[in-house]
Image 1 (cartoon, rainbow, N blue to C red):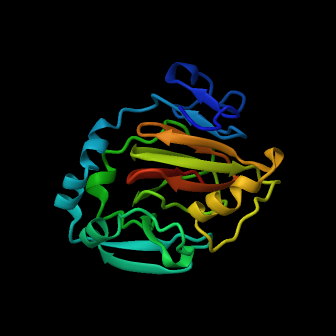
Image 2: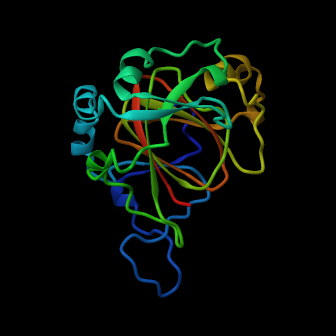
Image 3: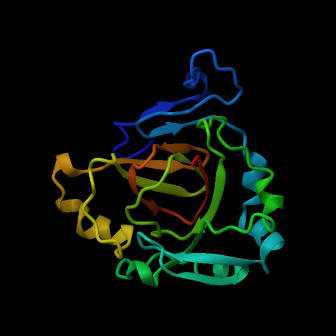
Length: 236
Protein backbone atom coordinates (compact mmCIF):
# COMPACT_ATOMS: atom_id res chain seq x y z
CA UNK A 1 0.00 0.00 0.00
CA UNK A 2 2.58 2.60 0.99
CA UNK A 3 6.33 2.91 1.10
CA UNK A 4 7.44 3.34 4.69
CA UNK A 5 3.84 3.27 5.92
CA UNK A 6 4.44 1.04 8.95
CA UNK A 7 4.28 3.89 11.53
CA UNK A 8 0.76 4.78 10.41
CA UNK A 9 -2.56 3.44 11.59
CA UNK A 10 -4.47 2.06 8.59
CA UNK A 11 -8.17 2.00 9.35
CA UNK A 12 -11.03 0.56 7.31
CA UNK A 13 -14.56 1.86 7.79
CA UNK A 14 -15.53 -0.87 10.22
CA UNK A 15 -12.66 0.13 12.52
CA UNK A 16 -13.75 3.77 12.86
CA UNK A 17 -16.12 3.10 15.70
CA UNK A 18 -15.13 5.65 18.34
CA UNK A 19 -14.27 9.21 17.39
CA UNK A 20 -13.32 11.06 20.58
CA UNK A 21 -16.07 12.95 22.36
CA UNK A 22 -16.34 14.89 25.57
CA UNK A 23 -18.21 13.10 28.42
CA UNK A 24 -21.94 13.18 27.79
CA UNK A 25 -21.58 14.80 24.38
CA UNK A 26 -23.98 13.91 21.58
CA UNK A 27 -23.26 14.38 17.91
CA UNK A 28 -23.38 12.76 14.51
CA UNK A 29 -19.91 13.70 13.35
CA UNK A 30 -17.98 13.42 16.57
CA UNK A 31 -14.58 14.88 17.26
CA UNK A 32 -11.57 13.50 15.46
CA UNK A 33 -8.36 14.17 17.33
CA UNK A 34 -5.67 11.63 16.49
CA UNK A 35 -2.23 12.84 17.53
CA UNK A 36 -0.51 10.96 14.70
CA UNK A 37 -1.21 10.73 10.96
CA UNK A 38 -3.81 8.14 10.01
CA UNK A 39 -4.62 6.59 6.62
CA UNK A 40 -8.37 6.11 6.17
CA UNK A 41 -10.22 3.88 3.73
CA UNK A 42 -13.89 3.38 2.90
CA UNK A 43 -15.14 6.52 4.65
CA UNK A 44 -17.36 7.94 1.93
CA UNK A 45 -18.54 7.22 -1.59
CA UNK A 46 -17.15 9.93 -3.85
CA UNK A 47 -17.68 8.08 -7.12
CA UNK A 48 -19.82 10.90 -8.57
CA UNK A 49 -17.32 13.54 -7.52
CA UNK A 50 -14.52 11.48 -9.07
CA UNK A 51 -16.44 11.21 -12.36
CA UNK A 52 -16.92 14.99 -12.39
CA UNK A 53 -13.15 15.44 -11.86
CA UNK A 54 -12.12 13.71 -15.07
CA UNK A 55 -10.11 15.90 -17.44
CA UNK A 56 -12.94 15.98 -19.97
CA UNK A 57 -15.65 16.90 -17.45
CA UNK A 58 -13.56 19.59 -15.74
CA UNK A 59 -12.65 21.22 -19.04
CA UNK A 60 -16.29 21.09 -20.17
CA UNK A 61 -17.38 22.88 -16.99
CA UNK A 62 -14.50 25.21 -16.13
CA UNK A 63 -12.31 25.73 -19.23
CA UNK A 64 -12.73 29.52 -19.17
CA UNK A 65 -12.63 29.90 -15.38
CA UNK A 66 -9.66 31.76 -13.97
CA UNK A 67 -7.63 29.78 -11.45
CA UNK A 68 -4.98 31.08 -9.09
CA UNK A 69 -1.69 29.19 -9.04
CA UNK A 70 0.78 29.23 -6.16
CA UNK A 71 4.52 28.79 -6.24
CA UNK A 72 5.67 25.43 -4.89
CA UNK A 73 7.86 26.76 -2.11
CA UNK A 74 7.25 26.68 1.62
CA UNK A 75 5.58 30.09 1.87
CA UNK A 76 3.90 30.25 -1.58
CA UNK A 77 5.03 33.82 -2.12
CA UNK A 78 3.85 34.27 -5.69
CA UNK A 79 0.35 33.94 -7.15
CA UNK A 80 -0.49 33.79 -10.86
CA UNK A 81 -3.96 33.82 -12.43
CA UNK A 82 -4.70 32.12 -15.75
CA UNK A 83 -7.56 30.24 -17.46
CA UNK A 84 -8.10 26.70 -16.23
CA UNK A 85 -7.84 25.28 -19.76
CA UNK A 86 -4.43 26.87 -20.24
CA UNK A 87 -3.23 25.38 -16.96
CA UNK A 88 -4.46 21.88 -17.86
CA UNK A 89 -3.14 21.89 -21.41
CA UNK A 90 0.21 23.61 -20.84
CA UNK A 91 1.33 23.15 -17.22
CA UNK A 92 0.57 19.58 -16.17
CA UNK A 93 3.83 18.26 -17.57
CA UNK A 94 6.26 16.33 -15.28
CA UNK A 95 8.16 18.51 -12.84
CA UNK A 96 11.68 19.61 -13.81
CA UNK A 97 13.81 18.16 -10.97
CA UNK A 98 16.21 21.12 -11.17
CA UNK A 99 13.67 23.97 -11.03
CA UNK A 100 13.39 26.03 -7.86
CA UNK A 101 10.20 26.31 -5.87
CA UNK A 102 9.58 29.93 -6.84
CA UNK A 103 9.75 28.93 -10.53
CA UNK A 104 7.18 26.15 -10.12
CA UNK A 105 3.45 26.91 -10.23
CA UNK A 106 0.56 24.63 -9.48
CA UNK A 107 -3.15 24.78 -8.70
CA UNK A 108 -4.05 24.07 -5.09
CA UNK A 109 -6.22 26.13 -2.77
CA UNK A 110 -7.21 29.71 -3.58
CA UNK A 111 -10.40 28.25 -5.06
CA UNK A 112 -13.31 30.45 -6.09
CA UNK A 113 -15.99 28.58 -4.16
CA UNK A 114 -18.87 30.37 -5.87
CA UNK A 115 -17.58 29.52 -9.34
CA UNK A 116 -16.71 25.93 -8.41
CA UNK A 117 -19.78 25.29 -6.23
CA UNK A 118 -21.38 23.00 -8.82
CA UNK A 119 -18.41 20.62 -8.35
CA UNK A 120 -17.81 20.93 -4.61
CA UNK A 121 -21.45 20.25 -3.75
CA UNK A 122 -20.91 16.63 -4.84
CA UNK A 123 -17.93 16.03 -2.53
CA UNK A 124 -18.51 14.05 0.67
CA UNK A 125 -15.82 14.92 3.22
CA UNK A 126 -14.72 12.55 5.99
CA UNK A 127 -17.52 12.39 8.60
CA UNK A 128 -15.40 13.74 11.44
CA UNK A 129 -14.65 17.18 12.79
CA UNK A 130 -12.95 19.04 15.60
CA UNK A 131 -14.96 21.00 18.13
CA UNK A 132 -15.03 24.72 17.46
CA UNK A 133 -13.82 24.48 13.84
CA UNK A 134 -15.47 25.03 10.46
CA UNK A 135 -14.21 22.79 7.63
CA UNK A 136 -12.74 24.51 4.58
CA UNK A 137 -11.92 22.84 1.25
CA UNK A 138 -8.82 23.25 -0.90
CA UNK A 139 -9.00 21.58 -4.31
CA UNK A 140 -5.99 20.89 -6.49
CA UNK A 141 -4.69 19.41 -9.73
CA UNK A 142 -0.98 18.95 -10.34
CA UNK A 143 1.50 17.15 -12.57
CA UNK A 144 3.84 14.29 -11.73
CA UNK A 145 6.78 15.37 -9.58
CA UNK A 146 5.04 18.47 -8.27
CA UNK A 147 4.29 19.10 -4.62
CA UNK A 148 4.88 21.45 -1.71
CA UNK A 149 8.04 21.40 0.44
CA UNK A 150 7.90 21.18 4.22
CA UNK A 151 5.44 23.44 6.03
CA UNK A 152 2.84 23.11 8.77
CA UNK A 153 -0.65 24.36 9.61
CA UNK A 154 -3.76 23.17 11.43
CA UNK A 155 -5.22 19.65 11.21
CA UNK A 156 -7.26 18.20 8.39
CA UNK A 157 -7.82 15.49 5.81
CA UNK A 158 -6.38 15.07 2.32
CA UNK A 159 -8.11 12.81 -0.20
CA UNK A 160 -6.69 11.72 -3.55
CA UNK A 161 -9.33 11.60 -6.29
CA UNK A 162 -7.02 10.61 -9.18
CA UNK A 163 -3.35 9.63 -9.11
CA UNK A 164 -1.08 9.07 -6.11
CA UNK A 165 0.43 11.44 -3.57
CA UNK A 166 3.46 10.64 -1.43
CA UNK A 167 3.68 12.28 2.00
CA UNK A 168 6.65 12.93 4.30
CA UNK A 169 5.77 13.97 7.86
CA UNK A 170 7.54 14.99 11.07
CA UNK A 171 5.97 15.72 14.47
CA UNK A 172 5.89 19.37 15.58
CA UNK A 173 8.94 19.05 17.83
CA UNK A 174 11.14 17.65 15.05
CA UNK A 175 11.93 20.33 12.47
CA UNK A 176 13.00 18.74 9.17
CA UNK A 177 16.14 19.62 7.27
CA UNK A 178 15.05 21.46 4.13
CA UNK A 179 15.46 24.61 2.04
CA UNK A 180 12.17 26.56 1.74
CA UNK A 181 12.77 27.35 -1.94
CA UNK A 182 13.71 23.84 -3.05
CA UNK A 183 10.98 21.58 -4.35
CA UNK A 184 10.06 18.30 -2.69
CA UNK A 185 11.53 16.51 -5.71
CA UNK A 186 14.88 18.27 -5.16
CA UNK A 187 14.75 17.48 -1.42
CA UNK A 188 14.09 13.82 -2.20
CA UNK A 189 17.07 13.75 -4.57
CA UNK A 190 19.57 15.83 -2.55
CA UNK A 191 18.72 15.58 1.16
CA UNK A 192 16.67 12.47 1.79
CA UNK A 193 19.31 9.85 0.83
CA UNK A 194 21.79 11.24 3.39
CA UNK A 195 19.37 11.26 6.33
CA UNK A 196 20.18 8.92 9.18
CA UNK A 197 17.41 6.39 9.91
CA UNK A 198 16.51 8.29 13.08
CA UNK A 199 16.17 11.53 11.09
CA UNK A 200 13.87 10.15 8.39
CA UNK A 201 10.22 11.20 8.26
CA UNK A 202 7.10 9.14 8.50
CA UNK A 203 6.12 8.28 4.93
CA UNK A 204 3.15 6.97 3.01
CA UNK A 205 1.68 6.99 -0.48
CA UNK A 206 -2.01 7.86 -0.64
CA UNK A 207 -3.85 6.16 -3.51
CA UNK A 208 -7.03 7.32 -5.25
CA UNK A 209 -9.97 6.95 -2.86
CA UNK A 210 -7.83 7.04 0.29
CA UNK A 211 -7.66 9.83 2.87
CA UNK A 212 -4.81 10.97 5.08
CA UNK A 213 -5.53 12.68 8.38
CA UNK A 214 -2.71 15.11 9.26
CA UNK A 215 -2.61 16.35 12.87
CA UNK A 216 -2.19 19.92 14.04
CA UNK A 217 1.22 21.53 13.40
CA UNK A 218 2.83 18.44 11.91
CA UNK A 219 5.51 19.28 9.36
CA UNK A 220 4.75 17.73 5.98
CA UNK A 221 5.90 17.76 2.37
CA UNK A 222 4.03 16.24 -0.57
CA UNK A 223 5.02 14.75 -3.92
CA UNK A 224 2.51 13.90 -6.64
CA UNK A 225 3.63 10.67 -8.31
CA UNK A 226 1.22 11.04 -11.24
CA UNK A 227 -1.00 13.76 -12.63
CA UNK A 228 -3.18 13.99 -9.55
CA UNK A 229 -6.51 15.46 -8.48
CA UNK A 230 -6.91 15.93 -4.74
CA UNK A 231 -8.94 17.81 -2.15
CA UNK A 232 -8.12 18.74 1.43
CA UNK A 233 -10.53 19.49 4.25
CA UNK A 234 -8.93 21.84 6.78
CA UNK A 235 -10.35 21.75 10.31
CA UNK A 236 -9.07 25.03 11.74
